[in-house]
Amino acid sequence: MYEVFGSIASRAFRVLWALEELGVPYTLIHAKPHDPVLTAIYPAGKVPALKVDDQIITDSTAIMTYLADKHGALIVPAGTIERAQQDAITHAVIDEIDAVLWAGARHSFVLPEERRVPDVKPSLKWEFDRNIHRLADRITTPFAAGETFTITDILLTHCLNWAVGAKFEHTSDKMTAYAKEMRARDAFKRVRALE
Image (cartoon, rainbow, N blue to C red):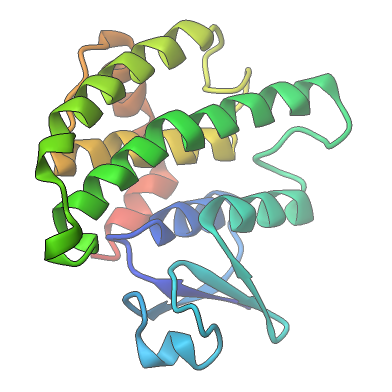
């Protein structure tokens, strides 16, 4: 049984979605960053965290990769060109989409108020839209990283949803249609129902 620490209003949503897609049992331990229930097992207190056999795995992408590799689904086999291509799209989402959204969050509510620079947000929003279009141009298959649904789709769709809440708009009809299709998946709906 896996134990997931976090909430669906965080990157833990990604891990929960992966677990639902895999159809494996898990327990969600509701925890916000730096919650004592989390810092007791992981002093940095970041979410999500996954507890497996008294070991802690952190970072949503690392957790999803571990789960996908372990269960032989949602990922292309390691050591193949297809896996390298999947990893390239995954890292592009992390570097060019997730990182921009995270910078926006830091300057909205994460950093101490005196360290926030609200004037950076218009630049970040412009960069986000530009990066979404660049990524859309790279995706030439039905899913983000190939012909089948993978953890890359979970990561990208979560970022696209995060962008809506953060008011980071984009003008890519292709990405809007893609996100709508991914949100229609049963596993996505089951995680949403956890609210």
